[in-house]
Image 1 (cartoon, one colour):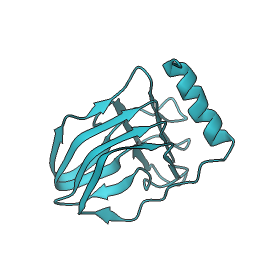
Image 2: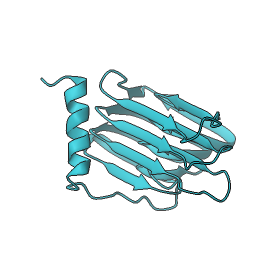
Image 3: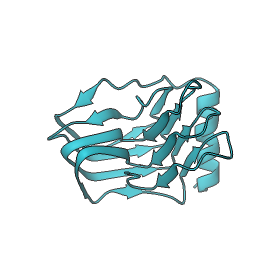
Image 4: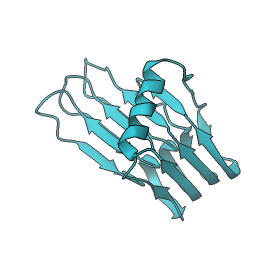
Length: 174
């Protein structure tokens, strides 16, 4: 089979060829998503204001379970230049609020990228499964997997004064 680097190159070429459609999640999700063991291949989600990922926000009582994401590309490019902003992104959900559960979820051969405009003071957060949480932060993770050998996490700003950057394979919660 292909190496992790070769798979990542194929993800980038898929996106650059613009053959993938941009998945735009709705607002908050408070239901149960049971993937029944399926693999979602080639999820491409891109936004400029924290609204990317498979689900934008998990709200109290949400459950995501039994699904694998392969060759996902999640990109948030916050271009706010008037004031410091935030760039949070993850494959499964940008943020979680309340008491939520993610079980039997895997992310492989994927890229997650949070980028900021050229202004200090914001926060860039990239997570394989979850990017950030909002009080109260009660997230239960069971049997979740992010393959760091075949995937890539990037969080950066375009200035040297940029210090609020974090990445994590499973959850990069503040």
